[in-house]
Image (cartoon, rainbow, N blue to C red; front, side, top):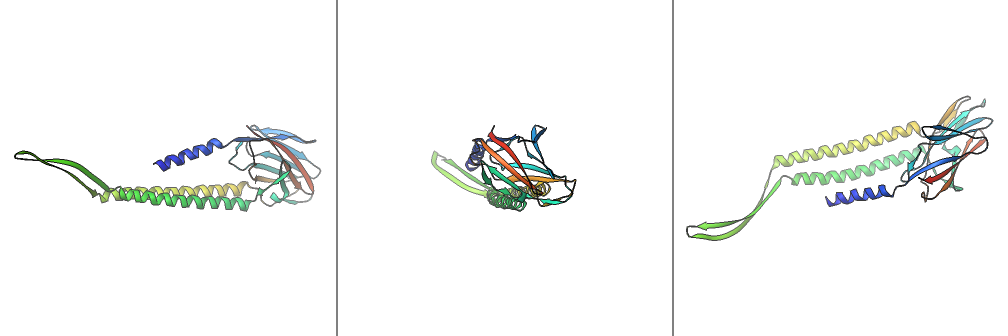
Amino acid sequence: MKKSALLFLFSLGLQACASTLSMSPKLQEGQKEVYDSGVATVISKKQNTIVALRPATSTYESTQRPEMIVSVFNRSAKEFNISTQNVKVLVDGKPAKIRTYEELVADVKRQQTMQAIAAAFAGAADSINAANSGYTYHSGSTSVYGNNGYSGYGTYSGRTYNAAAANQAQAAASARSQANFTAIRQNAERSLINLSKTILRKTTVMPNGWEGGYIVFEKVEKSQEPHEITFLVETAGEVHEFTFDHNKM
């Protein structure tokens, strides 16, 4: 019980330490800004391509990696490919790593493994407690009276085992453990499906076609302080530059 309370307080402490962050665009010459549900999208037009870039959400937590959505339109007569290799992120002029689809998938699987190990330990402890729940302990004291009145005093103690109660508790513990494993697996599957549908991977942009996806880059260090983040998107030999102010809300 004390351990659970400590873990709960620790999680509350982590939440309290998280900061809410936002990115606001700084338009460059020739760029246009449009809004959707309070989130700004910056549109950059060049001879052969149009690139639109926006944060995935209006705000995000400092415990999360920042996410951007990039969309590319091919206004030329020749196809080209777009992937995370065509995007660079600079935080105050210093390169920030963009996570590839494969790296994000590996992160999900690693987290699933760690959660499964923790669930296994918790399940084992739950099973042991359930098995012990069949024991009932008895203790007390007694006074002995004879024909001539009080004759003595004593104590007693012992325990009994209720197998039916223990089996019922173990069945409940097993069900909880299986439910935990199922939830971990389902959460991981949902995360992997979401990654496959959203993350930018190598894609061919056909003439007059739109393509794009999410890009995820590493957490901004000292996120409580203001930063300038630059995104360079290379498409068909043209480089589109975007600048965002990164601030704590």
